[in-house]
Image (cartoon, rainbow, N blue to C red):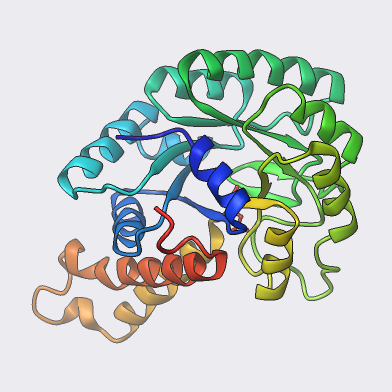
Length: 287
Ligand code: 13P
């Protein structure tokens, strides 16, 4: 059964580790992430962007697929199905479709509007027993059409949003979706520490997990980050493994063109990537 992300994130915050949010794109992605979580006894959050939701034929399809897998694959670790960077309308649709967690990304609105809309969605999430993530200070780069300027969040605005009763808070601290440029300045830990101080115990979310060096991940966790989002890294691993299979001509040998064979190396590559991240985040054995 899907669960809200609330308990798993509060435990992570208290235990000084982070739960990974891994974005899904299709059946192979979902199965790879769920099996890796189960094999490593780790809680996990499946992230679905609005673009990925559309690609997978709508939120109800996603809920059906994930619920089916939890049962058929006998997944017993805590799993949350979470809307990533949701719009106001998208968040409502996901609640209706059966997601167990939503994100409302109001970071591109003026703060008053972000507060108003977040407040409304907090009430809706509470009524249904779902977790809700809000965002202050847009994350840089682009993810499925959501483009952010890469602002550094104002800690006082973070406090205002946290005080609305959200479950977890994403704040821009120099993090970027996708690959980091060679001249990237790194995460802004002074701002993160200030946000942690002002939001007193709120589990914080680090987006743009791909390519952040291990020492920065550890430091972010020590400063209250309890959820780390990873998307691009699984995509790169999947693409590389698939390319190698094709370049080696394996699709031309015997029944190598069978999609179940063609997609198998990419599937294994996602599993390996997710395991490495779970080790780094410290969530293994914490289910
Ligand atoms: P990356 O694609 O950089 O790993 O970021 C993922 C993310 O933050 C999803 O919201």
